[in-house]
Image: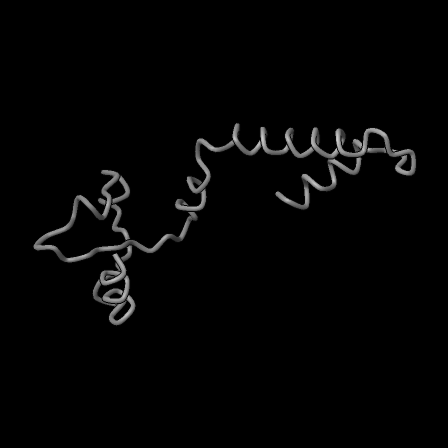
Length: 97
């Protein structure tokens, strides 16, 4: 994998292409266009990769937030110096996110 990345880095004009309209309409992926072991990558103008980056992890992130909030609430249960333990837990969960 590192070898392929270095190969693309050395000569990006050869390996990175702009998607044609046919590729958009047919939903072509670089894997479908590989010929002879040559690496092909497409430019990502519309942020398509970032849209799928954490796909399917939403529930896990929500559970992490709930666990952080619960841990802060339990850790500060007997503390009388903090007025709102829930708000502190929300702040910590936000910072970690």
